[in-house]
Amino acid sequence: MKKFKELFLELTASDIIVICFALFLSLLNAIFHYKIPMWHFDILINFAFIGLIFALVFLHKITQKTFWEQFHYWYLVPTIFLSFKEVGYMIKYIHLGKDYDQFLIAIDRFIFGTDPTHVLFNIANPFLTEILQIAYSTFYFLPVILGIDLLINKNKRGLTYSTFIIVYGFYLSYLGYFLWPGIGPRFTLHVFENTSKELPGLFLTDFLREFLNLGEGIPFGTPNPASVVQRDVFPSGHTQMTLLSMYLAYKFKAGSRKFIIPAGILLIFGTVYLRYHYFVDLLGGGVFMILTLVSGRYIYNKWAEYKKETPFDWKSFK
Image (cartoon, rainbow, N blue to C red; front, side, top):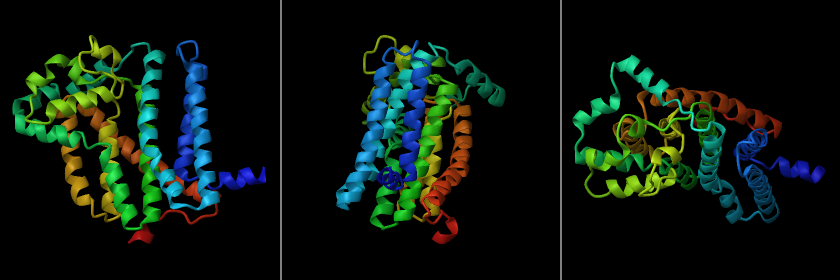
C-alpha cells in the first residue's frame, strides 16, 4: 500500500485528469449500458489505459531514463484523439440522433438576423479558402508546437502546466459535446456534398478537407455523412483550445507565439467561414476557455499542494 501511494504521488496533474475522465467515461458506459452496444469493451479499454499510465510512471521512476520521461509527456497527444473518438461513439447511442443544431442556429439568427456562414460566402474566394483551410488544419499542431518550444527552452514548469491546461481543456469541451451535440452548418444550412464546389481552394484544400472528414468519421463517399459525423459543435473546441494555446504562448513569452497567434486568429475565423461551426459555438469556446483557465489553475495547485510541491504562480515567470 505504501509503495502504491508513492507511485500515486508520482502522477502529474495531467495524469490525474486523464484517469478521472477515463473513469467518468466508464461510469457513463455502465449507466447507459442498455444503449451502448460495446459498453463493456469501452470500460475494459479505459481501465487498461489507466494501467498503462501507472506503468509509464513506474518505468520512469525505477529507470530515471529520459525516454520514459518524454513518453510520459507525449502519450497525451494520441490520448486526446482516442478519447474524442470514444466520446463520439457514446454520444451517437446516448442521444440517439437528438441534435441541438436548430437551437444554435436560432441563437445566431437572434444575434445577426441571418446565418453568418451565408454572409461570409459573399467574400469567399479560392485563395482565402486555401489559407483558412491550412490554418484550420494546424489545430492539433499548435499545442504540440508550444510544448516543443517550452521543452527546447527547458521551461519544465511551463511545459507541465501548459500540458495540464490543454488536456483539461479538451476534456471540458468533450463534456459540452455530451450536453449539446450538433453537426454544424455544413450539414444543416448547406449541402455537405457541395462544399468543395462552393468553397474551392487551390492546392491543398480538398486533401486537407477529406483528411479532416476522415478524422470525424466520414470517409470519402459516405452515403449519409450527417448520420455518422461526430457531434462536436458546441462549444467550438477549435476556438477554445486555440485561444488557450495563444494565451499560454503569450504568457510564457514562447518564441513560437509569433506563429501560434496569427495562425490561431486565422483558424478561429476559418471555423465559421469553412462552415464547421456556428458563431455561437465560438462564444461557447471563449467561455469554456475562461472556465478552463480559472478552474484548471485551482485543480493544478490543489494537486501540487497534495504532493507538497510549489503551486503554480504566473508571478514566478515574470
